[in-house]
Image (cartoon, rainbow, N blue to C red; front, side, top):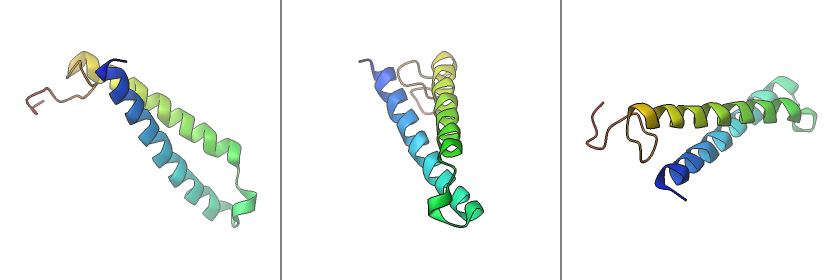
Length: 78
């Protein structure tokens, strides 16, 4: 597995977990109880964020550091 693939996978997983946690909190507040959460909406939001995260990594590979998908170059500058 290439460095880019590992970095992208880590980025997508972190984004998905963070968005899912935020969605649980938001939907919990909206629903009023944990048992009546709209789990389908939660996963739709999390998967959408994961897709955007992957697209951003691919775009970063084209414009920034091709080894990790960052928009910053290897020397830390834009």
